[in-house]
View 1 (cartoon, rainbow, N blue to C red):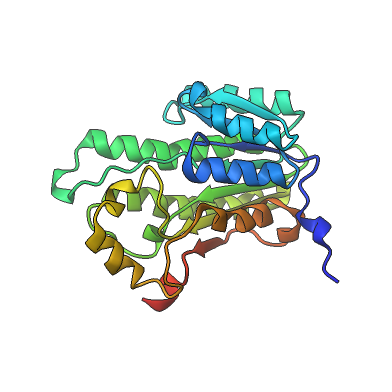
View 2 (cartoon, rainbow, N blue to C red):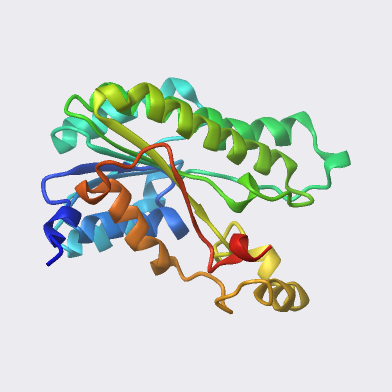
Length: 254
């Protein structure tokens, strides 16, 4: 019989960036359901109220923090505050991310810097600060993308940032394994969120894209719960440096 206690996060403490909505909020609540106390961040702390309410309704601890991951000077203090409030840190989910759909010939330095500073540089310095706080080891989960495997027109800065994040995941996994820190990634497929909403306004795009997904549907946010809890828990104790697509079979079929 399987030991389901391996998935139990009771006594674990987590920090989830970009948790005010969408995937970040979903994962933060999933970790809380599994027993973790969770610090949640967003640029505007007030936007975290719904996520905090969901976590506390489960009997967990939710600690909202304002954090703009583009500003590296904020990161160490925010991570330290979260660890102090929660009594340590054992899980980091690097979810904060932005996208700005732009034809490549129209990408400006400002667009490039905003996306790379959020999705890649911010994620690295959050991981660095978290690793220093993980005195007893821990798990870091980076949110990558299908753009780490396929080229998406009008998403060059975004794809570059997520491909860099995958490289960072592998390198940190190799470097930090002796510290007891596992570093893995999740690559969501097509999920309808505030960031991707403009695509879903196009019915022709929806029909064409859905036809490419073997499971015949777009992802529901709850489809990410299991992999997030798995990678945060003892159930994945011997897994590091990996990226797990959650895409309904999209990559397997192209």
